[in-house]
Amino acid sequence: MPKEPSGQDSSASPPGASGVPLIDIQRQFRMLHEELLAAVGRVCASGRYILGPDCQQLEESLARYCCVSQAIGCASGSDALLLALLACDIGPGDEVIVPSYTFFATASAVARLGAVPVFVDIEPAGYTIDAQAVAAAITPATRAIIPVHLFGQCAQMDELTRLARHRGIRLIEDAAQAIGAELDGRRAGGLGDAACFSFYPTKNLGAFGDAGLLATADAALADKLRLLRTHGMQPRYHHQLLGINSRLDTLQAAVLNVKLPHLDHWTALRQQHAERYGELFAAGGLDQVLGLPVTLPGRRHVWNQYVVRVPEGRRDALREHLAQRQIGTEIYYPVPLHQQPCFAYLGTPPVLEQTERAARETVALPIFPEMTGDEQELVVKAIGEFFRHRAPPRRSPLAGPKFLGRREEKVMNDER
Image (cartoon, rainbow, N blue to C red; front, side, top):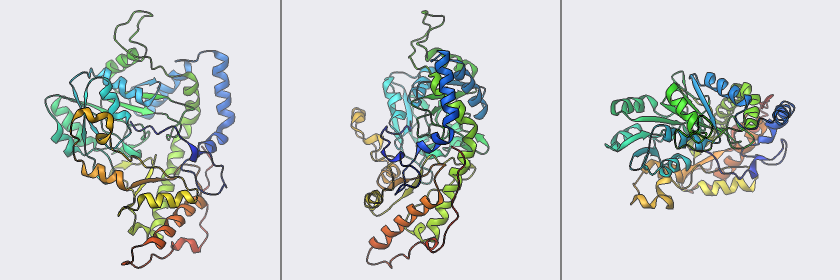
């Protein structure tokens, strides 16, 4: 499931430093530090470090937020996927259809249970799993489908739900990057049999370490998940199922309880930044040389990442150009899962045209709630310089971004 690598070199620059970080989690901490430290202090004083009262509070709050009846905290988003598959009785020989263009955990949870990850292609506009490709990949051995709501936008859940219900297949949402995302007014977390969330520090709702959660409207499935996360133990030392140890730390829950009331405001700021990027790129004519991200019909996009396409093999050169100007970027994801060495045992990998193209062309630009208008201008100006200086000879050089001749009002972020 999309949970990002632990390196965070680009996330520590203070506001006003030269360059622009990909994300700066310290700005959010500085804004909430008194509340956060007080919450952590209360947990330390209580001594209830695992599945304490803060965990129950968080589960209840997130169940309401996701518009479902049940939420179950666990140790990480990766564990949430594993627990969901365990609860759905996925095991050796079962096939689970997954996108190849996603973070490793989406498929590794399948393989760890002895099941077979079946990799399919994505649709190119939203980078989420292609429902038609899923339909073509279903066999009598297919037991589950895991759509990933990638970069903060919901997958084609209506089509996938029809497929799953018709075939009696479980539908597990990988919503690690999509808390608060919606499809036709229905929120991620309530679109499948179960949904898996990550609270890795760089997520839209981030903890101080690893933490995760499952959401479901199925009370029986929720009871099974609660049992599985604590070694299948109930009562103490009596094990009803072969579970795992994946309990939510109370410290992480306390941090998330402080942050959750701000989430919708932070999401609104991300949406404003995404819209402003589009305006700035268009003003400089850069929308003609970049593939800009879109919000698909009926979606509430929460913009965990702002990912652009750079065609004609110039993505890596652009990234190096931005790095020289201390502008953070990241590639999600440079090697599709179907081409990873650890999955070579599955045999000759399929040809997934859209997945492989996205891996060659996409790059994530800085976006986070506390980002300023000046920082966005810096990013767009640097990209404009790259294309102006490196345009192919057969084309007219691009004019500099039009907005650079005037002073744009800075986007002030008063929270996170």
